[in-house]
Length: 340
Length: 270
Image (cartoon, rainbow over all chains, first blue to last red; front, side):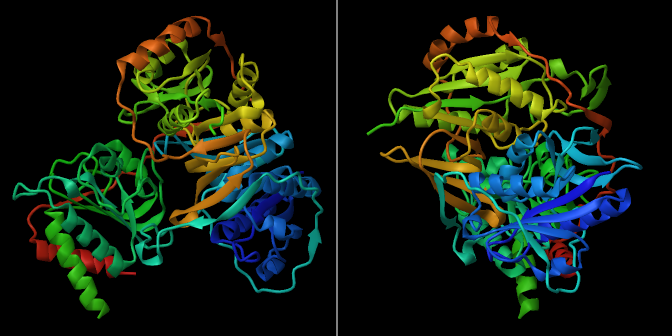
């Protein structure tokens, strides 16, 4: 019989669980019910885990302490290994957070197990089959394995987040002997609050392509104006900003740049593949990598000057053949007026 | 004072991102249609790792960069003709299968075994570099597995920056959720760094660098050890292209005002 462990960690608060962690709880609960397997939740946290887990119907194990407030390979790997051993897990589900992605493979190796990541769904009639994408979201495969423990890292947004009445969680503490720590987490670096353009929880992804910094109908480049328009739109809508690689790379090629763009904004082949309900692309030219970056966007619209742009056909819901400078200025005015 | 670093970069080769890919079934499992004739490039994130490694080595005299790459010998030779002109490194080729459908654990075992046997490599000076994910399997686990096999327990993923200090310690910036970087200070080598894009532009081709690299590269390619990758019980029920095809409405005859109005409605609709 399988033994399911949802392995996760607390947020920076030291107690609360992220949406991704709660999604993993839902996946674990569903899988345990389908397989008739035991169900355990293991948490690495600075403090006692969130009360919502009281209603998850699972045994709850925790490795607790200030040493585990920091996301660091050596301490996290030791904690996760201890939790997996205590749970005697055959299948380990974990969210694809940066913290779990850093250590899960190492933990699987220590336990003589195997790992697959970026799992988007779990199926199978009798056993477990996992679906994931290959070649940067270009093709989808369904895999299974005999080896155990089998670690599966679940992509965010693929399951409903677990919710239930909060209560007192009965937590079994798991002791960990920490190795010598050579790494200290000194903090986080991020742009000032009003300059942060990456917003994973935004309802809209706005993608800026290289066309924003190319010559416009008057024969001139208007990069400064493009920057104003894009930032103005982001301020009004709270959208997250994505970019094509070509636009981000222009900085290193001595071409006009949008100074607020970094490689972290990049979507596609060498960037992220974000999940947002809606996406609006502007001035992107037609390459397959752009499609790759849009794989998990719900409703997609585009503004382009090229009526024959290949990537939009069959990929976007609506393509407006128009000047993005003109349209985006007007859209921002309209939305700002509505907000009052 | 400069630190002497031994930097090993693990980098595979992948189909050029602009190629259209189609899965096929082969006797060995899933593969790509015409895989061996598709133009290939060095894995993009691993290429960033290579450029960062060369930059770091250049700033620390006495340091050395090895590039360990697993792939069909002929294909490796083809890709390295371009890569060799970018930065200085010693190629360590492994003649094995290409593609995203192989098992990461088997790949890691071959890489770790090769790295452990590198002549002249001092493990206490080792920085193990690679891309944080490949453009093929994209699992983001191979480097961690190699690190574990080599007994390295300071590992960083999604790295955009490393700043070495005089005492041998270094600060690393790793990408975390929400467009932020986590800053950590590690006491020193050995360590594993899975790179995101970093901050360096792709170096321009330099024929002199190419000539220097070629002197060791061609003999290394001739002597490349063959490797087979075990499936480790990994089975594929199916591999397919996404079928979803949208009905695209192409709007050519609306004024900017009308488009803006329609978009504002759409954006505002919950």
